[in-house]
Picture (cartoon, one colour):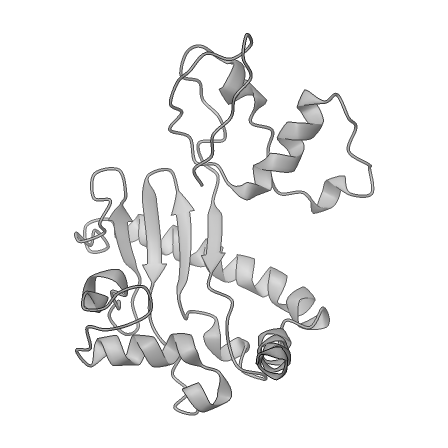
Amino acid sequence: AMSFWRWPGTWKPKTVAALTAHLDVLPTLCELADAEIPTTLQPQLEGFSLTPLLSSEKPIAWHNDRLLYQHVGRWPSGMAAQHKYAMAGVRQGNYLLLKSRPCDNPECTVEVLGMQCHTLRSIEEGGTRANYTMNNGQFHWGVSPRGTWVLYDTKKDPECQNDLSSEQPQRVQAMAESYDRWWDNVYPSMVEHGGENQLTEVLKKNKKLSP
């Protein structure tokens, strides 16, 4: 994730290419403030302090093997498990492993608040108009092939047009397996905390409150 940090008189302007995320903000601020993170919270933290990157005047090695997982996290009530691979991805270094697809449940429609899958199906059928774009949906909502992951080098190919999955099958397998482990680990907790139906209930509430 891109972020800007400024500390006049302490840090010099520079660009850092390391793979970072919002998960790193809290550990960073705590270290800068010399604030101790409670021991009960430490096991839950997945981020790292950015202080070494911010303070070093030269490029340094910093968790170069870290994996970051992403998922759009939107589905109708009762359909979380079926959306495991719907708009999912893994980041490692310059690489992005991606499944930009709708779920396979035909009942996931606009009527039950399955808007993301509805849009992806429309794009897969040749549509060009979608959220955030009037006529360039094929580019902004690119749909990956069914049943496969696609792999991109986002440094060389920021538009994600050149799929490298056939050239680097071992990387694809390793990153895909790590995604499965991540999902299987977070899924029970997500359901326990209402993630199975949270979106539907929130949208219903907002609809009732809207004029």
